[in-house]
Every structure is written in C-alpha cells, then in structure tokens.
Image (cartoon, rainbow, N blue to C red; front, side, top):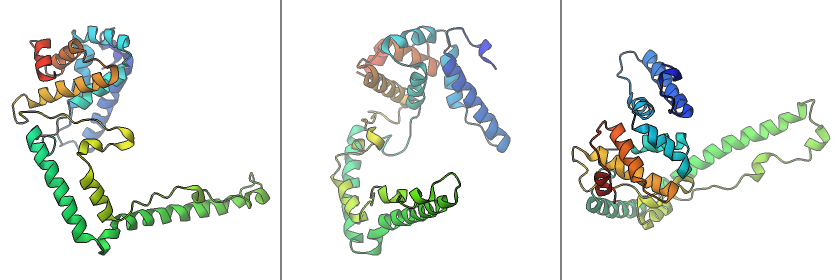
Length: 256
C-alpha cells in the first residue's frame, strides 16, 4: 500500500508510522516464516487512518494542541491490556497485593541482610562501572597519538570518568526497605513518568479490554489537555473495536 490509498484527511506522519509497522512485520515474517505475525498495532493504525468517523477526530486534534503522532501513540498504549498481576486486579485485590508486596520485601530484606546477597546490586554496578572506566582511560590515553590533538594540552586534561557521578545503588536490603515504604507501584516512574494505573472493577469481563482502553485513553487525553474529550474517545474506541453503536454515554459510564 502507499499513501495514495489513504483518505486525504489521514495524517501523513501517522501513515509513515503505519508503513514502518508493516515493514517491521515483513522483516519478522521473513525471519520466522512459520510464526504467526503480530499485526494488532498495524491494524489499529490502519483503522485510525481509514475509518470515516476518524476524519472529524483528526481535524479536531489541533484545536487541543495534540499532535497526530502523539494521539496515535496514546491509542496504541491504551490498546495494551496486560492480563496478569497486578494489571488485572480489582481495586480491592490490588490493595491486598500491595500489602503482600510490602510484607515480602521486608521479609526478604531481613533474610539477606549482612549476607553476600546484600551486595548484589553494588557488585553489578561496580563491575559495569569498572569496565566503562577502563575503556575511558584507554581512550583518553590513546588520544595522544592523534595528530589532530595537541599532546602537551592533552596531558593536562583529566579522563572524562573522573567527572562521572557516583550512582552506587547501595545494599539490596536497603532498597527492599525503601520499596516497602512506597505507597504503591504507581509512585514509581522512570524519569518522572509517574501516572496512576487503570483499575477495572471486572477485569475478567469479556469487554475488559475495551473498558481498559476507554479509561486509559481518557486518562492520557485528560493529562494532555485537562479535558476528557468524550466525543474523540467515543469515536476512537468505536473505530479500534469496530463497534459503531458505541455512544458517549457509555464512555462516561466507563470513565467518569
């Protein structure tokens, strides 16, 4: 397929993402011809780019300063419903799971304290750091043979590793106790990406994946714009799950 087969209103950047997804599928299909290819994400993008109801969605996004590629990423992220703990737990089950995690962390911290296990994180850290330091030292020394480098000036410089921060993670038992003091895993996020997870009252319901999608997409859009944008969520959900009967009332009921 090429961009000419898409409607004129389909965003070119998202068409490019769809093509990349197709290229990746082709790559893995040639590597493992007997394996069943995972087409879900490419299928979702194709629907977003071709279903007529999406025309008004793409046209409204600039009003809320949402880039087309960002919205496509929101939709793809919302479509990933992990059917394992703790993601498929009800709110009550999740609270019980948190208690179990905290109690287990404390118990393990007490078991390994003062043993060699307690130095596990530090050993991994220093092993990796020492390799990088050695590589940096050798690279710094070899620069003296570079004809483009002033040898006298270079001899006055220090290797870069001496300016590296100390990221020693500390003892494993200390980290486990810190883990136990955290209120929930929602407070843990890489590079400040902390965000409350979506919990379903009926995680095993036949429509659990759709309910998760509605809640997650609403959460992401609200985080981006400060508004739930029900119409956009309704039309996008109807497109992804191929259910044109879906209404905004159902969206509000699923994600108040």
